[in-house]
Amino acid sequence: MIQTQLYIDGQWQSPIDHGTRAIHNPADEAVIAQAAEATRADARLAIAAARKAFDGPWRQTTIRDRAKLLNKLAGLIDRDAEQLARLESLNTGKTLTESRTDMGDIAATFRYFAGLVASESGAVNEAPHHVISRTLREPVGVCGLITPWNYPLLQAAWKIAPALGAGNTVVIKPSNLTPLTTHHFTQLVAELDLPPGVFNLVTGGAEVGAELAESLDVDLVSFTGGAFAGESIMKAATGNFKRIGLELGGKNPNIVFADADLDAAVDYALNAAFFHAGQVCSAGSRLMVEDSIYDEFVSRLAERLPRIVIGNGFHAETRMGPVQSAQQHEKILGMVQAGIAEGARLVHGGKRPAGDVFKKGFWLEPTLLADVTADMKIAKEEIFGPVITAERFRGEAEALRAANDTPYGLAAAVWTRDLDKANRMSRALRFGTVWVNDYHPYFPEAPWGGYKASGIGRELARIGLDEYTELKHSYINLAPKAMGWFGA
Ligand code: NAD
Image (tube, rainbow, N blue to C red; front, side):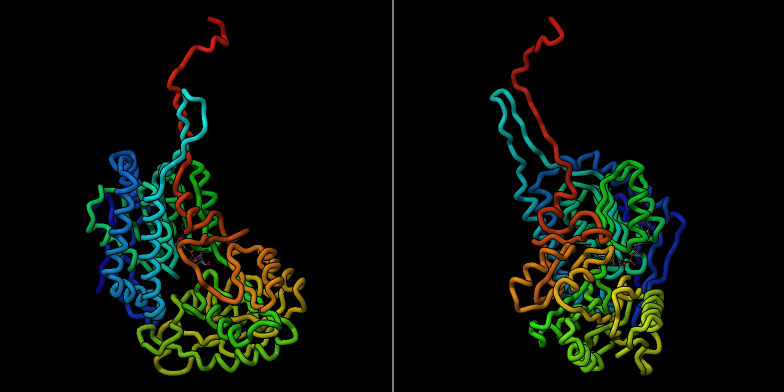
């Protein structure tokens, strides 16, 4: 049985009140670990350690030291990639293939930020000859990083790599449902010779996250999760006007025009909605299909859905695992029922799959609800499970109006062979990412984040590093002379 601890000020330790939480395998509900469950008091110790480290020697590190650190971490992730992938699948239920891909992406994220950090140089500004004017990037300070349960280590990497690379100190709080890979990553950090307090792990629930958001000793909080918690973090951050980054939920339209390559569009409609059983912030669960091909599209999906292999993520043939928790399972089934009650037509799924192996665990069939209209709850709210809702639209203007009519703005996709239309739609859709004739690709070089209620700020890309820096104007007058403005 795995037992996890907190990592504070360079020491592995139990929570002050010795709290633990059982961690479950979503495939069979078996207990796979006992994780340390911290309280606010532990979070305060971690924040104090991070504060001391930031105000101490860590400030003197060079960009070369920090780039080297990120590259070393990438190497250690590569070394333990298989073990990390197995832990991620065990804890989240996702297929091992997906977890292996995540680990490759995580190492790539560390290497990308290592390269960016190494290329940092600041700028010398044009100024009078007796003045040196420079624009400098400096670390923000102590960063509180709060991550969700769907991509535990990937979301953590998007925050940890730029935070450490920019010279900050870190307190990370993974979701208390999925702490295992972040705990293993912390073991990798502990192999390195970092000053105590630079990196701290506090596993626990919302109150630990709230402490990070409220603390006057935390300078930046970066959060990935739902809108409800995001709102309370934003309010809590006003105590010291700390910097915030919020990566929140989405209601992401996948828009298929009649002139699209239908084979590809049908295939990708499945990928958009059912990767990681739909528990992806950018999942394309809101399928919108042009009227003239709508019936054919829905029947082609209906044909494919029963053939999706549901099963344990460790089996090679599995394409979709369980959802992560009992709470999520119940919530998704509730959304499906709400859709049916509002008049949507259940074409496939909407229930636990048949068979003994699916009796325990949080299993759901891939689900298709057709004849959904834009005013239904299931077309408006994030489902975060293996559900496609199919809406019909007539023409570009209607598609655009309906797609943008959401408080969210994370990601959208458009399927068409008409390049003009693709360009018009990409520009007019109010989403942080717009894919054309594809779904889901992301990479460290491109920014990630949402418009509107999908968040504040961006992760990855150059801006993903800049978010963890303060910009300073340094002005040095080499030949000061009295001005005499107020007399001699
Ligand atoms: P959640 O909001 O319940 O929890 C996220 C994290 O915040 C957890 O670590 C949790 O313990 C902590 N937390 C909860 N309440 C808090 C509070 N009041 N103060 C501080 N911390 C608090 O979200 P979740 O259920 O773990 O994740 C699912 C959500 O995350 C979905 O809405 C999904 O769309 C979103 N998400 C967004 C992105 C993105 O890049 N935009 C990526 C992944 C997930």
